[in-house]
Image 1: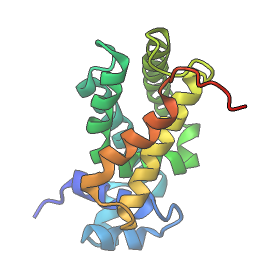
Image 2: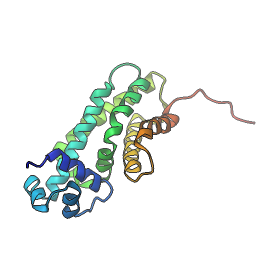
Image 3: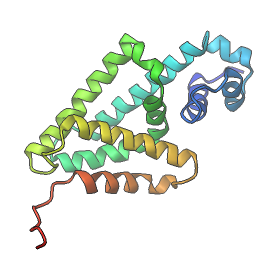
Image 4: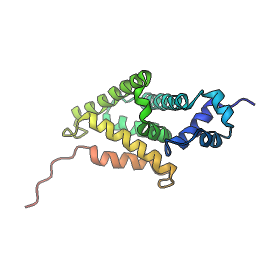
Length: 187
């Protein structure tokens, strides 16, 4: 019986996003395969981590594409992005926590292309008067991604129900990012 490579990567995400130093034996066990089979699929830990990182970035890019973040109102685009990215929040958690990925040129290029798109979304939202202008587009991008990662960890640990994840992410993020009219200072 052939081993489904994507299923092994998904199992690896489940283990590595919470325990980055997990042994390959743990990952193989989570995937329901032997360590030898894991080594046939991925020649070593570095190769496995790289493949999980690439999968995470490919899925994040797909979420950006699905949400069509370059189109229309920035607030609506961000809500579409929330819905598109939450199913892969555990991959974002892995990406946020795996330092080894930052030494890979191909991964760096994928990161950069996606960050540019996120910055453009938040900058457009600021220009539309939707998002706060005193927070940089770069910081809003970073904060959004980190909250998605937090959603991934919270779901994995059972602190947040998957059905509540998109609502929780959107409400928390937008509650801090939306621009509101200035309030008079109490005297």
